[in-house]
Image: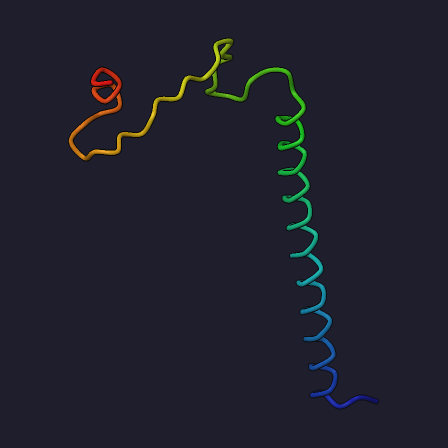
Length: 78
């Protein structure tokens, strides 16, 4: 027969192992849901929530090199 302290140690180890497996399973389930959502957004034809479809090309303005001038002022000076 086992000593009470040995039985307690084995029981504590089993509970720790069960807790670790449960935590890992919950983490993997949550991670899989995040990846599914990312994949759905990546491959969907519709824009994500809060985004509008923009048929126009994005226009970029040059960055001002002087601290007092804005990019529009610099373009008019040329």
